[in-house]
Image 1 (spheres, rainbow, N blue to C red):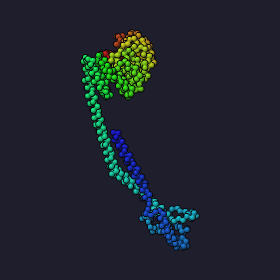
Image 2 (image 1 turned 60 degrees about the vertical axis):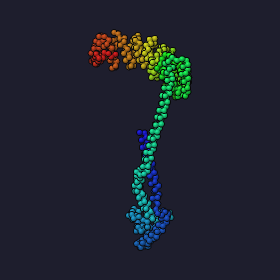
Image 3 (image 1 turned 120 degrees about the vertical axis):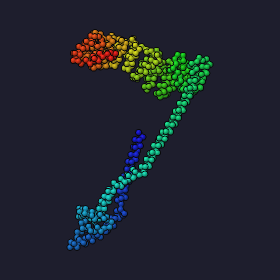
Image 4 (image 1 turned 120 degrees about the horizontal axis):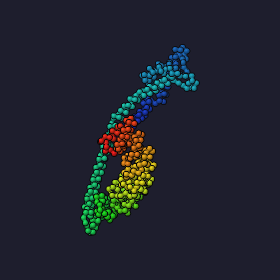
Length: 513
């Protein structure tokens, strides 16, 4: 689509250039069109001599008519209205000139001022030249549109446009051919690399498999190590590294320890460290993962400094790698964070802990962390791993300035079944925001008592739609007395909560919490 737009833009640009070129050619043709067979100076000199003779003849004729013999002569100049017959007999005059002299005869000429300035003026010659000039301009501007449009038509529909269309078609075909050639060559290169990788991978798996499955002597193990050492190129060593990573994910126990030994003996950690130091963000991430899965605790300090890497993916990979290598305090990286903790990282951390059997460290002291996302993460971890030792610290989070922290603290206390904060939550209910109020009502189903009925009735009277629904559900399912109080409230509120009561009383909705 983009190539079509560019191609169409080029065609329009060339068409505009042709139009501009045609207009330029027409403008350049104006002087040629205006030039006559003789030059302007030669015409003026020749016709001025004829004009003098015709003027004398006209004056003699006027003298006879006037009877005085003088006529209306002023230094050899006569009026233009007395010379119409003479002008019609001039050479080089166009056939239509005699009809147009009516416009020239009444020209206002001040002969006295011209005589006073010493300038001789021939009215016949002036009218004749003026008429010729006006006729030539009239003919030029009358013919200009037709000639210009014919020129544009020639350019637009002639051989030049066809030539450029053919040229662009060839260029388009050349582009297609180039893309096809590049695609074919790229596929061949990729297939060749893939075939090389698969063949080497099978060779290495055949060599390494006895090392994992069979009980080998020391000599046999050394022979396997010697065979693997022969793969000295970076490509082959990376293939060995990938095979070891696959094995580490699938093996546990003694086989897993053997994989780490191979990683150390073959000095493949140097390849991983090289990626971490000099690679792009993807290679750095892969290098950190290799160090975490195949390395030892000794690499923890080298991984630690990438927790605050400028790239987010590298930071996330460094956090997970640090957790895998630090069994004592896997959340120690939280104290080293300089960048904002991303909520998505909390899911990655949880699944890493779950699939690798990592137990969380004590998190009580970390609930004062300045990062809001870190506090939310710790509250969720306390809830998931049921850490009762942090209950009092979680209860203090109910007074946090952030409403989401307070909401998460209520959810955590509800999962830990810690109900001693019920009165505090009821007192703060009216001051809380809407999501926190809903969580307080949802938590009360675990510790509702008779003295809580009045609190719930007030929510039915003044609460929002969701608050009314939660309060009606709590009262209806609390006891028969709660159901009776609901019908009394419905009468008091003129039947506004009748639909809520019917919905909660529906047997199909009893399983809804």
